[in-house]
Image (tube, rainbow, N blue to C red; front, side, top):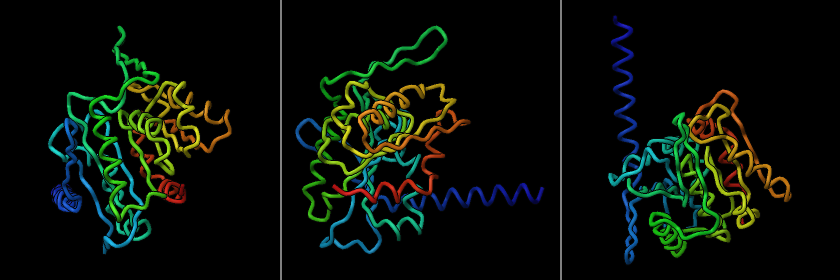
Amino acid sequence: MKKIFLAICLLITANALNAQDFKKYDRGSYVKGTDSIYYRILFPEQFDPKQKYPVLFVLHGRGESGSDNEKQLTHGAKLFLTADVRKTFPAIVVFPQCAANDYWANVNITTNDKAKRNFSFVEGGKPTKAMHALQGMVKDFLKKPFVNKQQVYVGGLSMGGMGTYELLRRQRRTFAAAFAICGGDNTNNIKKYETVPLWIFHGAKDDVVDPAYSIAISERLKMVGQEVKFTLYPNANHNSWDSAFAEPGLLPWLFSHKK
């Protein structure tokens, strides 16, 4: 009983510490015309506005949508709070939040008789309201004097992985590199971002977003000879982001790229 009680105490303490640490992500919002989007932002330690820093935009999945400006920190945010990462990669990290009634990517979702989701990704098309606001926010950040325009990155998981591909094709000249976890896209859109170095992740047992989407994108990019890394976790389901964010080579690879 003592061991169980101690474990519960440690768990409560850990959660409290995590909640406190997340406060290091400042709250922000972008509002222009009909566009509005909330975000959380982590500045480097010893931040100097006279210096220029890399900036990374991280797009959350469907489950973290909303208007609380908190849930988008559920996956991945802890990684950028670790002492080693903050010391080795002094970058600005931004977690925007998609509204609950919207979607990062322009995609039609249907469910078959077996409750399996099918994603039909639009080729071209207009951006969703959330994507339009995200584009405006990214462009606004590029105007800030402390952002290094040669080191702008984007990555995301699930819906955010889909949004990553879409943001890349809509602003392909902006990003030095990107990563997409358990996402997908219409392969006809690939030609619009084939020059951007990509690291793609997926779980082989994913029963929410078929790994075939990531495999198709990876194979198409390899055919045109562009830099693409593809990691398929054989035992992972939809939560392949846990393994992806734990990859020791992810951040060194990402931040090594410059435009």
